[in-house]
Length: 254
Picture (cartoon, helix red, strand yellow):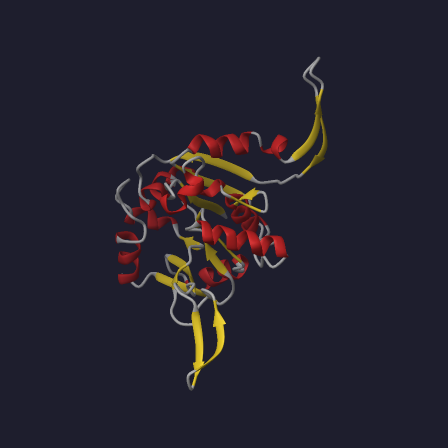
């Protein structure tokens, strides 16, 4: 199944990095978060990626054009230009990079990918969040219900620190934990090709008219994921993900 990754936004809330590079290229453990997202799909057998670019698209294109040299040790003979690799981190992914416009909204970016997807179901997610969602189980769930779209529902992180209070005594303090109440859109969609018809054009926001209309038609199902999910909206989010990776506690790591 082909995978669309939305990677064209400005990432203004992460301006410490995104003034220079696009948000999907911000690194965790020395690799762009985009790589981590792609690796999670590849580990479930989905390796045909279609990346919807916009802001600083050239930097993402350059990364994949130079992927082998950036991820290997090598010797260069400056006399004849011969390159001898010593250590290669091989991946067998197929990556299609499409400039979907600087100002396009999320729905518009999806619509522009239609010629590359064709008349077949596809996976869709955002280029700024990681999760340990079981993508194979997600796809199986989507096929079981026969509806147009499946969205992965996740528990959000609390905006503020959470206190467990019993008779005035704080029994536990958790700094911005993942809550156990409520569900939000966590990305990781499975989508039938008929969904393209619900997107008008570049100015369409995916999360508004298209998904609202699909929900009203009874064609939107939720795959409820109780495990780890974290978007990278701020430097604090990025630092938290980096700490998880460095400590060996990154549950999305395979």
